Amino acid sequence: MPYSEAARSLGAHPLGILYRHIGRASLPVLATFAAVSFSWALLNGAALAFLGFAGDPNSLSGG
Image (cartoon, rainbow, N blue to C red; front, side, top):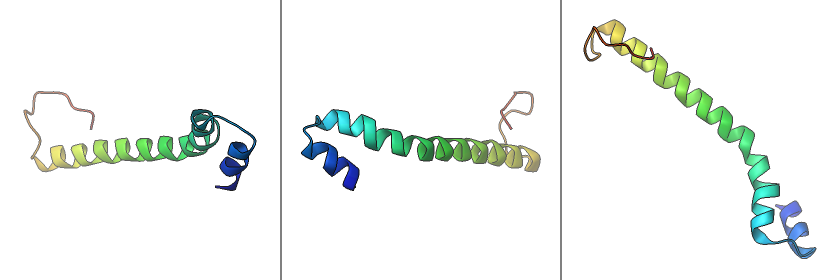
């Protein structure tokens, strides 16, 4: 990534580069991935419960 190389050439600390440049750039991607994964888990749980393959029918679940 050219902006992290430029920051390093200006004397920035590697952990500062990791947080400031790489961490902030990847945060939206990671948040989207977590939200989609969580929604798929709820959808799969609801589908399994609908088909009767869930655990105890009297217990609550997210789906």
